[in-house]
Image 1 (cartoon, rainbow, N blue to C red):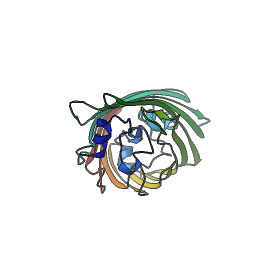
Image 2: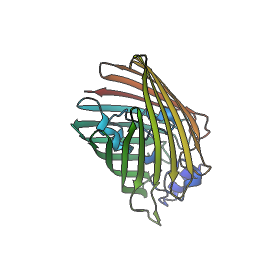
Image 3: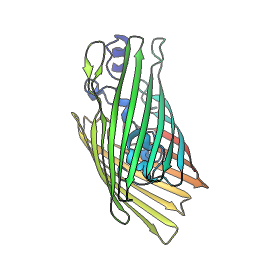
Image 4: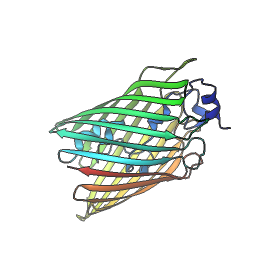
Amino acid sequence: MKMKHILAALALSLPLTLNAQEAQNAALPFTRIDRNPRTSAFAGAGVASTNASAWGALNNAAQLSFIEGMGDAAFGFQLWQPSNDADKTTNFGGGAAFRFGDFAVALAGVYDKCEPFAGYNPSDLLLSLGASYNILDVVSVGLNARYASQNLAQNAKLSGFSADLSIIGRIMDGLTAGFTVGNIGPKVKGSVDSYGQPAYARLGVAWNKTLAEKHGLELLLDGEYNFGSAAAVSVGAEYNFNRLVYARVGYRYAGEKALIPSHLGAGIGLQFKGFRLDASYLTASEILGNTINVGLGYSF
């Protein structure tokens, strides 16, 4: 029997784990899952990217000010860890963002359906409200306020509030830098003890260039520190033809105790008249292997 099931059966209110080594260190770790089918293809890179969508309400609100037009709506479906019988989940998420000049607001939600155990259906719920403000088109600052809850068993439930602070600044034309400190919140109280949330800090740069009018390229580099855990580095790249067809790839290298382990991401995207279809696939990881993420979006 998997460790997660044993803990749930004993109703100890320990957190659902993405990595068994983190089981006693962080509550509500599912909040760290990347739900965006575009950025998940970058394996965690992209904190400085200005290619924004409603998914920014979940982790990087500073991006919301860069939404083109009046707003953006998104919906996604994810099979998380399908190769891991105990920890795999079927996830649904979506959100909407609205921009009013230099100010933007967004609301996003996620529901995770976990594998049934002993007649009980574990689940996760995540709701996030985001807001950002763009100062003179040079610096954008953002804030996310989040509520997360997790039901492992009838007597093993956790819930808590946390926040993300983010900033993106233009260094020069096509080059931006970004910083996020996320999952900052009080300890989550269980039936036996209290557990800290999986807080982290991420710093990165992004370079975006249009070549020969119809060819676009974006390169991403992020460094991440997980408080009480391990550091990680992610690199990503995206190529687009005429902003119609997109190809993406990324790799994350993480320390042994990192909540999100090392893995490779790849993805594709299609965009036409405001509509977009994105998909990503995670591999090169025993824990995350074969994870897929598909999403629909519309910019208006």
